[in-house]
Image (cartoon, rainbow, N blue to C red; front, top):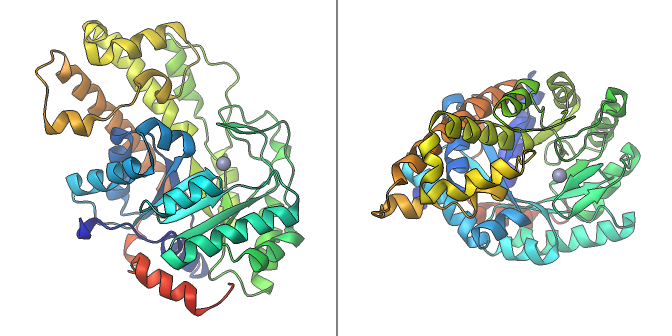
Length: 387
Ligand SMILES: [Zn+2]
């Protein structure tokens, strides 16, 4: 497994900052995954684009697969199967202290600790505590400041609480965090509002400028959550295949790219991949009506037939663990249909990931990620105190 070790969260993000200082502007794609085929698809897209990336799992994804150790295994197994040696970090998305510690102990290379609903000083204290736990293991930490509107698992807020750019430097200095998600008007989930004027990319610009003035930009990174573009052709495709998704809207790609120009170095993508998986699965059932009868897929078809607005694969796939299946193919009939569907999903994701990392400016950056192990990273963190 040593050839397939995960890269530190820090070095992956730093490659984007270096590229940005050399005249380009780049951010690392952070792709949420829930199951093996999804991880395979992301890796395939990254390979086509020669891009480094962050693969992340939420608390819900960890639960779906039975724990952080299972997600760690899922990703390293997918890397091993495909010979993937480009830099990939594994990150916990929206963690709390308990999950953060568990993931830092389970091989993750980054932890997001989301205490953004707390008062600023409490948020700082909780985040600093996570840094104290994670950095000695070489594990990077992302905090969040401000609140995004929308719902993501157990994280929800009615409306945006914008980050104040003048507090961003203070947050980094007092916590020692590597990265900070700042609320600038994007939302979680597929409904990102209709009002483009809610998007205040100047918050990113001013935060980055303040960090620059404080000498922080080389090793501290801004993050954009809720950044799926929700392609309307994908929504229309799902609806033409029996789904019924209304009012889903994302962030225009141009706005995300403006955010990257202004200083975002990590862009979180979740909803777009879910939509692609849902469209592919619905199309597969339409083209292969008999597939709905096989044991491995029966449940998925039933959920999609009854929940027309379903877009979360966890809702219709149960715990999908095709690596177990592929290692020891059971005699069960219909397993080939399952494998065929997973291949289609993998390709769909690969195409979308390749497209996105090209747009984000991180295509071709795999070779510029500093080659450090988590042990190396631990020593580096130890050497420079707070930040
Ligand atoms: Zn988020």
